Length: 114
Image (cartoon, rainbow, N blue to C red):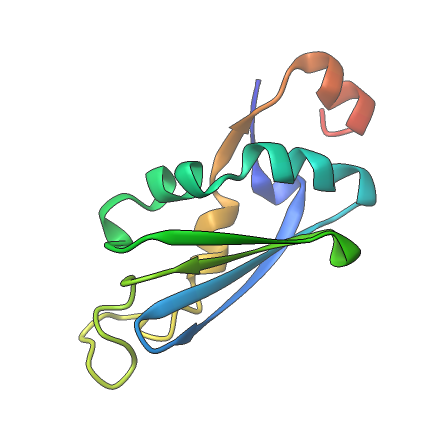
């Protein structure tokens, strides 16, 4: 089955120049390993598509049950240079939480996300 990250995590985002920064935090401790397994740099890049022109870096923060992503070249040059509606990257967290991941029924039941 596919589920949105909204069922597993909350997120915050911001910017530094032309790089959006998105933190994804597990809603429960037991969700963190699933996030680590499924929310990869490759899948995030695929989810955002052409919005992110540069590379994506992922940092694991197990003490916080969180992942932090840097989305390079995603803000049209940054706040003072960009004509984008969200040149500071504030909506990238909501956009990432809309990403769907694959989870089998047994795991979904075990984690209580059905």
